Length: 298
Ligand code: BEZ
Ligand code: FE
Image (cartoon, rainbow, N blue to C red):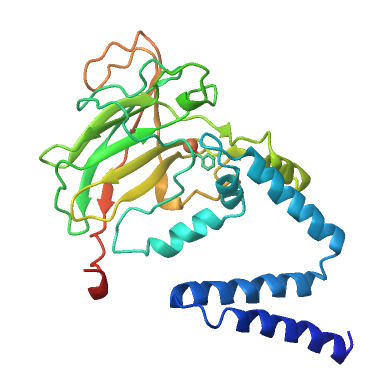
């Protein structure tokens, strides 16, 4: 490429950067300038053609058209690009042995039904019963009582209740840790399912030879006064999809042993599981302290 061509391209970047120089909000100025630098570098490095640029605009337009209050195709795009996971990684710095965070996904709903300790969050969702137990502790090892533990998951046909055609609430609920930080509940053994892939993001995955499948998981959101809110999942040890999760959500520390229990094995709480096989898993949660607010935010 000629020096003249290089100069023209570089001068354009400088002009756009300068156009944001007067942005009163310093953080917005920083973000817009960094965005300009990286987007222009992408176009210059790949020598993006005008046809490719038009197709990219068409793709984003289709993504917007599919997005409404029930379907968020932009978040899905961020998820499959690993951007959601990178933002979570940046914002949940490793802290002692605090449990790692992962993507929230589009299926969390506020206001899930409360269950007692030992209750069943399946609420009739099809799937193998799974006994889940553990503790909520701080990084010093002390119990965190009364933490609000939200859990949600897909049924064994791969659907969350919000994808059902009726208004049934199933495979979601919340409970509170006890005085000793302990918790226990029944759920269903997680099974793999695809992220919604009937839109532009699905077409992108197909064009790039990628699978929409998520590794089997059970979502948790844990909130307690004075602690960093934890959004995470646990994954099933041995799941073949652990290394190809479509949204890059798997972390080694979140892979747990779901122990298969053959039919007839007595349940820990004496529940009659109808003679069916069931599974059990232990998940001990460690919460990081809430960040100290910056002095100018107080
Ligand atoms: C989920 O795990 O529910 C999920 C996460 C990201 C995209 C789609 C689904
Ligand atoms: Fe999920």
